[in-house]
Each structure stands twice: as structure tokens, then as C-alpha cells.
Image 1 (cartoon, rainbow, N blue to C red):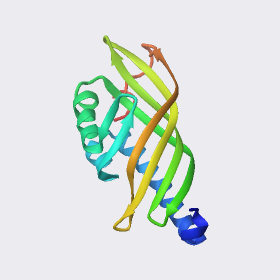
Image 2 (image 1 turned 30 degrees about the vertical axis):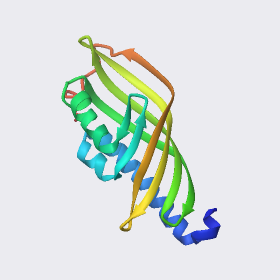
Image 3 (image 1 turned 120 degrees about the vertical axis):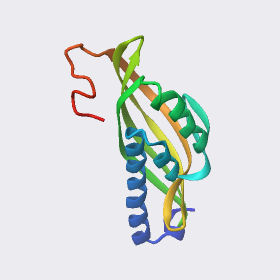
Image 4 (image 1 turned 120 degrees about the horizontal axis):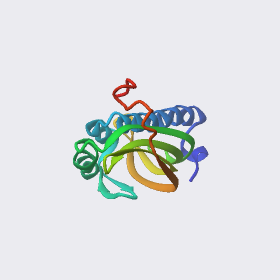
Length: 162
């Protein structure tokens, strides 16, 4: 069943914009290291499958709090989302594939590393109480690279990043 069967072109246009905004807000919440905001962008109890994690969104948020946000290993991060392909299963459900480019500053064995990861998000989104939310997320990592940070490069705090 396609968009033409159940969603008018105007509804589809508005929904596409809202879904793209949802993806941007999800990346922004990750960059802000705001686990609570991440949870609010998902259907409660929804599944999140990353290479490092597979469980509910609430479990993922707790994993982030315990393993990423509180141990000082993770500095600045940036998630850039692009090339979203959206297919509607009806007016309240859509499948979204998008590309992501993620940057992370990590501390490993006392040394700073910059890490870039390129991949894709496969999301199932549902519109609930007038708002689009992620009902299921699977992450595919296509490539990654890392390199030690030049000691002459300003660290996150001196560079004015949070």
C-alpha cells in the first residue's frame, strides 16, 4: 500500500517535513547528551538496535547514562542526518531510511581520539496523538575511522563546545 492509497499529497508533504524534523531532533538530543530528550522522541518501549546495543529505548537511555555520559570518555559529538527516504504505510505509519555521519571525541587510555562513523538509520515511525515518534530504530554502520587528536588542537572546553 503506497502513499497514493491513504495519504494525500498535502498530508505527505507535511508528514515528510515532520519526520525530517524528528530525525534532526533525535540527532540533536544525542549531541546534547540528553537521554531524557532521546526517550521523548520514541514510542515508549520501542526497540533500538545499534551495533553496541539492542533493547528498549528506555534501556538504551540508561546505557548511555551509565556508559557514555558519566565516565568522561565521551566529549563533543555531532550527528548529521541526510538523504531521508520516506515511505508511508498509511497516514499514521512510515518507514524512513536516512544516512548519518557521526563525529565523536573519545578519550582512550588517556589520549584523545576523533572518530567518524558513516551509516544508515532504518526507522519505523508512528504518529501518536498528533506527533511523529520513532517506533523502531536499527542502525547500520557502513564505515568508520579514527585518529589521535593533535595535542595542539584545542580540547572541547577551551574551544567553547559543550
